[in-house]
Image (cartoon, rainbow, N blue to C red; front, side, top):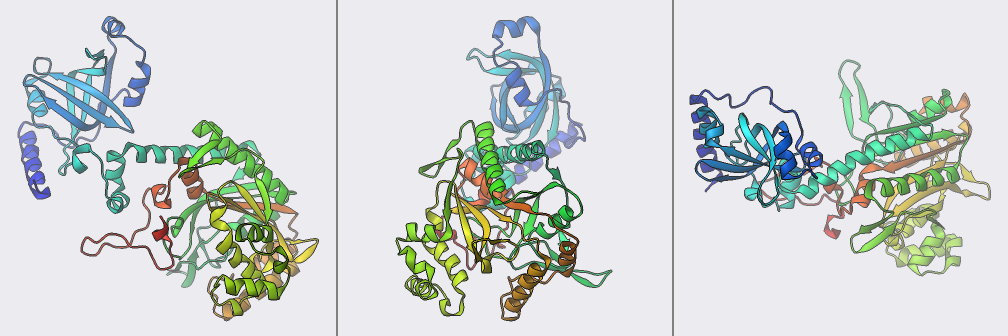
Length: 508
């Protein structure tokens, strides 16, 4: 039967319901218990105990199975990942209610009030004494409840995906728990949750291309934020000791299994601390989330296992290139050696890049995807980190780490640069890059420099990608599997999604 035929048949039933005087879309439902609450409460109650105590409930849900047996009917209703059977008898309902039962379809919403019982097979069931029709679904559930299999359709119509695929619903419930647990963890460490602007006159805090909008009343350009960093640091200047923010960032970049232009990140800053302190709290957070929410610190990632137990491995950027690229470590100590390795690796435009930038490219080429176990990569070139304090031993490198897990970056942390004169010089170098055509280089933010001039204490700061963290903890291969409504290209004539230019979707 074609979709329009299904719809026509359901519209005819809707008309019959209204002819019976049934409100097909009421404003409120009769409900005393959620389905999961019923299943949990009476999980160990025997049929005899239920019959003796007469436990009455009102429950509601979407009809996902229906068996008409003449004068009786069995159906299952579904709500928030839980499914409960209802048993309806003609002689227990009013004439209008029984006629309503005959007009039910899969996908309709129904409230059932009655006593809890067990069937002969032991299944918990609500024995209906009265029903309330709640919603007529004019379109059928996908594949009659056997699951929505088309991945593109799943992403585009998540409301069907979560009905059809219980594992998908479970992932998003876990995501919610990860967010709640992360907030509790940070508050337990003395951090204060704050909110900073989502629209900024100057985008900063990361090297990325921003989305641009316009404020009509003020007649000024504004940018969706690429990071909250500079505002959170202003709060440290202003006397806040420890702050964190969990919110959206927006970067005008391609789509891939690891990238969505709108993504969720936690950033946090602590006065008086440095990179080593950020490592410790990161290890503690990851191990706590894995153990408390997933039940173990040993979790699958594809065909491999990831251990979230502390301590995580620590490896310098150069050592990672040498180890995973199997190249001479000594060659990374000279500009000539770095450029030779870059040419061998076919790094694009290598002759136009500085040695520091090339080291970053060599790391991505040789090492990044091989870092499956949690690994802190340290000692980044200064060119890649315009907001970070330099190493006392070598001012060409900065006190920064990126945490890699499952072959992708999960976190990025600094001992924050707090010298206003040096920060201004770094900004000016970034502006020179912008003038040279790099539209991802940072803009000059003089108000931030002004804030530093009022005194910015030694501070450790970090950003953790929440979407990627959920991917890793739930063993989800694509970032689209953990974002409820990921960005998709518009469909053309029903065609499926194609990866954006520069994306790595083909690697999925």
